[in-house]
Image 1 (cartoon, rainbow, N blue to C red):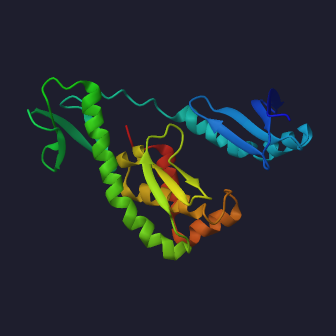
Image 2 (image 1 turned 180 degrees about the vertical axis):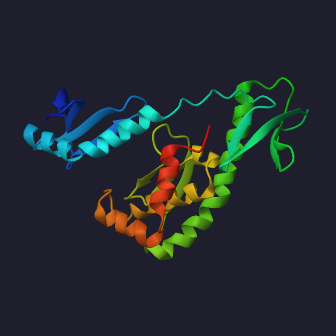
Image 3 (image 1 turned 90 degrees about the horizontal axis):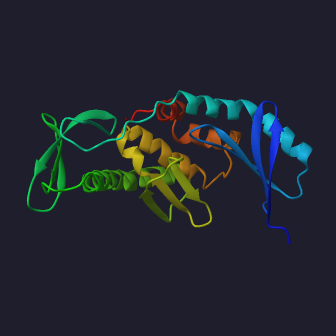
Amino acid sequence: MRLTEQTLLQVSDLHVQLTRKTIKNLRIMVYPPDGQVRVSAPWSMSDSAVHAAILARLSWIKNHQHQFQNQKASPVLQYRSGEIHTYLGVDYPLQIHPVSGRGRIELHASSGINLYCRPEASRAEREALMLDWHRQTLKSHIPGMIAHYEPILGVQVAEWGVKRMKTRWGTCNIRARRIWLGLELARYPPICLKYVVVHEMAHLLERLHNARFKRILDGAMPGWRTVKNQLRDGYSR
């Protein structure tokens, strides 16, 4: 039994990494930071059919590559006083306060984000406090969003969670009815989180990003395309 086979494929001016495996449908993926194109195809699909499918998605592929090329590299945050951090779409100055007790974060309109930690806390420890704060923020928003859209979409989410993701804003396991939301969404306006929640919930009705999927989004969240562009263009540092 054949498991997988990898080859390189030239389609137009694209260099495509093609992997043949035991799957039912062809998948096309574009990866940051350089827009590498990877395609997974079933063994039964001919080379010419794979070539034609890639050509049919050429504009979509080019659009994603263009986005990656225009994205500015995010600065490496040091979690020091005076540094600017983005939280729910708003830039705030960070203030570090040494304390002997348990670390915590407080947000004040006048002083910005106040991070309380031990004087000897490392950068990694300060970052962990910030990420935990972000995680709790998302967890406080997500249940209400899911509850609001379940009757609108006519679906039920069995499980949900928050985790760090490098290349996606969210994922959906259709069979388990489980969705995951990206931790980075805490840096974006809440409307962006809402869009990703609705997007992943819509996958419980339609697996593909096809016309039916877009109609589902149109019905549940008119204006979702504008929010999608906000995520594409980048709000966070």
